[in-house]
Length: 205
Image 1 (cartoon, one colour):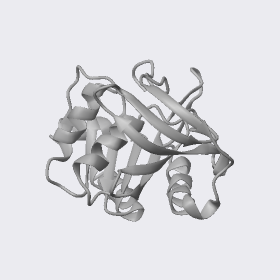
Image 2 (tube, helix red, strand yellow):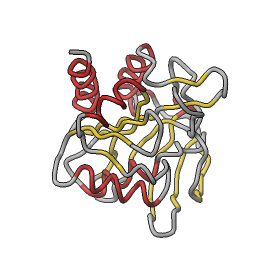
Image 3 (tube, one colour):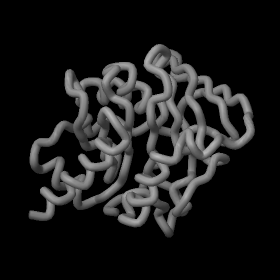
């Protein structure tokens, strides 16, 4: 980390309908990858600032682009349970608002995830991680990247995410204006996760 992290603050309006914890079968494949990424410190919490980073989601319904996502400020936990995930039911990028269902407030990056799902029906999983070395590698080697002037969790970031993925159905891009921030996406949870691992390998050669 070369700068004070900017992460975790929700910048949109949300209507959360409280519910009981979700059944494990709804998020178990996400949780398996989250555990891997947590062990690699790609998801976690900055120790000094006590600010969490990283979030994962998967699509639930192609008709309305609903998805399940890790709850806000859950990065510090090595494992999550059904009380730490949220369903995003409906989003409005123009109004910067969303409707959610769950026992916890949604991730601050929920609108960016939605932007990707709504852009490409073939994308079924979105992973947001942090890693300074990989982030710098991607910026220096012309990987797709968002503008340096655009911060996380904003309407502008959601629009930039659309531009980064273009017509692709799987890939990875750096969030140039969000220190250490990286997003991968794919047709499955496995594909989104493997893209991160493969890009990490390339960066270390």
